[in-house]
Amino acid sequence: MSVKYRRVLIKISGEALSGGKGTGFDFDFVTSVCESVKQSLALGAQVGIVIGGGNFWRGVKDGAGKVERVSADRMGMLATAMNCLAVGDVFRQCGVDARVMTAVDIQGVGERHDVRKALEYLESGKVVLFACGTGHPFFSTDTASVLRAAEIGADAILLAKNIDGVYSADPRKDPEAVKFDEISYTEVLSRRLQVMDSTATSLAMDNNLPVIVFALADPQNILRVLSGEKIGTLVC
Image (tube, rainbow, N blue to C red):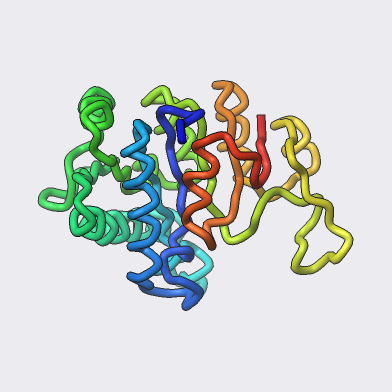
């Protein structure tokens, strides 16, 4: 098996790490994800990862009207750092060298994000876990994923979700929803499809970064996407 995309940025939702529990970690599932990434590295892929924080904190949604947006977003950044630390340790137990880089200074948690250093790590076969989003409130981890992908010169963004692609409507609510095999950034924006937020989608479009949306329920899908198998939805 060979890889179609040599350098990728994988975006994983925090909820996915909980294995359906909604909060915390399902370490059996996390281990299976790390093993799939390890197999990807063995094929010659270079992998950066951004993880959401939703298994711990959902920003203003969890703030119950008591936590202001800026504070809520910063709490979300801390949640992503916790996720990166946990996943980094699982990677190391799987025999993979993983480095946590943070968008804000958190001494002892991870290295301050530096593009050149991140590239050095990727080229030496290490997985880089990008924590704390962009480091700024009002920007989602979707936007952080596209930003980091652009910075490292990724060939594609792998958007690992709880759904197997992009649909014309929410398939859990609309039985007539149609799945797209391929769709343009412009159509995603004009239809207001919930692939990524509009800022992230526009940034991907402006930088010609293809986004492959697929289900993480089977972590081996990471390998399938990397090899060029047509699963999920290609946004380009």
